[in-house]
Length: 70
Length: 487
View: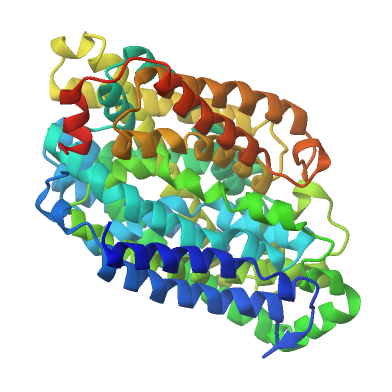
C-alpha cells in the first residue's frame, strides 16, 4: 500500500477513536443550548465529512473508474 | 387538511413513478438496474433515502425518549463514519465487477464468486428472512403515523395498507429508475421537513435552550450517557452499521451507478445527510418527556408524531406525516424491488424457468413476488407490537454479521465456498439463538454484559469464514482473477 493509503487508514482510525468520547460520558452540562455530549457528536459528524473528503482525495481507487476492477 | 396533504403527497409519488415509466425500456436490466445509468446526485439521494427509514425518524425519537441524547452518538454519529467507509471500500469494486460480468443481484455475485449454488440458495433465504423485519418497521410506522396525525380517527391497519399499496404501485410501474427518482424526491422531502418541524416545535416550546434547561431540571439523566449506555455496549454497537455492506437493496443501488467515481459524492456527503435527518427526531424524542411523560416500551414509537400533533397541528402535521411516509417508502421500495429482482434472477432464471421466459415475463415474476412479500409483511404488522428501534437492530445485526463474506469476496484470494457457507450458517444459528434469548427484552445484551449480540456473531462468522476456507481446497485461479484480478 502507498503512504497516501496508510494516511487515509490512519485518519479513519483516528475518527473511530474520537467517536468514543468517554470524557463527556457523565457530563450533562449545556453548551449553546445543547447538551455537551450531543454538541460534540454534531461537530464530530461535520469533521467526519471533511475527513472522508480527504480520504477520497488520498486513496480513491481510480483504476476502477474505467470499469476495470484489477 | 392533514389528510389532504398526505393524499396529495401520495399522488405525487405515484406520478413520479409514472413519468419514469415513460423513460423505461422493456428490458429486465432497465427495470432492475436502470441500465446502470444513475449519476452522483441521484445515487447519493437514492442510497441515503434507501438507508434512512422509520428507524431514523420514529425509532430514533422513541429510543431518545427513553435513553436520552446518547442515541445520537450511538447510532448516527458512528454510522456517519462506518457506512461511507463501507461504501468507499466495497461499492466501486462491486460496481466494476458487476458491470464487467453483468451481475444484477447480490446472490448472483456471491454465488459466482465461489461457484456454489448451495451458497446462492442459502444466501437468498437468509437475506429475504432478514429484510422482512426491516420491511415490517416501515409498514408499522405508516400505521402509527396516520393514526396519530388523525388523532386516532384512522386505525393503524389502514396506514400500513396505504404504504404497501403506494409502494407496490410505483415500484411495479417504474422499476429501479422510478425508485431512484422517487427516493431522490422523498429524501429531499424528509430532510427539509425534519428541519422545519424541529424549528417550529422548539420555537413554540420557547427555544432549544429553554427546553434543554427544563430537561436538565426534570430528567437530567437524559442529557448524559452515564446510566443509559455502558462503554462496552457503545463500542459493540459500532459494528451495527457494517450492515450497510450486506443490504441487498443497497447492493442493487451500487450496481445501478453510471461510473465508479459516482460514489465519491456519496462517501463525502453521507455524514452531513445523516446528521440532518437524525438530529431533529432525537431532540424531539428527548423533549417529549416534558409533554408526554410515562410512555412505556413501544408506545414511544409515536412520540415524534404526538409532539407535532400537540405543538403544530394542521398543515405541519400533514407535512410531517408526508415526511415520515417519504422516509418509510424510500426504503420499502428498494427493499421489495431487490427481493423481487433476486427472486427473478436467482430462483426463476437460475433454475431454468427463465430460459422459457421473455424479459417482460421475467419482470412480471418479480412483480408478483414483490406483491406476495408486501402482503406477508402487512399481515405480520397487524400482530406485531415490537419497538421499531429494537426490530431494526435485530435485522441490522444479521446483515452486519454477514459482512465477512463481502470482504472475503473482494479482497481474500484464498477464501472458498466452504468458508462462505460456514460463515452464513454460523450467522443463521447464532442469530436465531440470540434473537430467541432477547425476545421481549428491549435492552438485551449477551448475558447482561453490555456486549451486543452482533459482536459475538460477527466474531464467530469471521472465524468460520477463515477456518472453513483454510481447511478446504484453494479456489480456481480463473475465478479469483475475475473478482480480485491477477497478482
